[in-house]
Image (cartoon, rainbow, N blue to C red; front, top):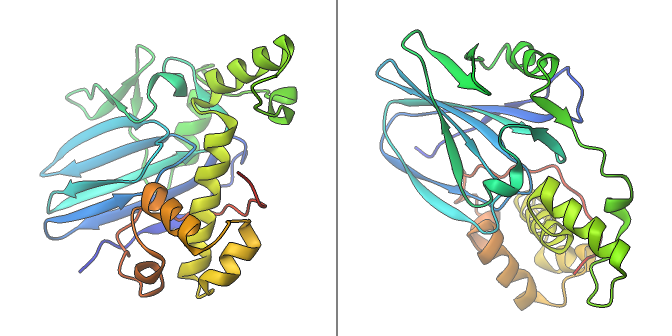
Length: 242
């Protein structure tokens, strides 16, 4: 049986955490992880052993083996949230493992923290925030800039600041969000023609290329629900973009 993800929103500031999810593998499987513009805290527990890592933004879809008998908890942090010891730009297409003490506490920023559960993630996040480790960046004008070869020196400075905070260029963010929105629409039953028109793809081939690169499957596979073991489940609805 394919992995099934349980998700929930949180009752904390949505500018810090977007969603919490969990799943369990009963048999050896693989999971397709779509490209994403935000970073995750991932906890896995198997045979009483806890592992914790921070996974950065990803610029393309990847497939990873999933060991059997493992419970996973994921905290998807909001776009623009910053964990100060580990800026997103330093972990694009990568991850940082966190030390775990013998008592099962996670070491972040030189301090040990009680590992969160699916039910109490809010407490964990608030403690990181109170300690000054987790903050919401103030992008401001950076979100309004356009990436253009003839950008002014000021615009280029804002572009560099945007990439330093998010880890990706604005163009990459638009492309990834649009592909994930397309996947969500296709899984919801929309025809590819409606997706192309709504999201501004040039044609079916353009959409297919984006899905392969950023989501890791085809429109037909999404509509047939062959990719239940996916971690994208974005709630993005971008308009037409590049």
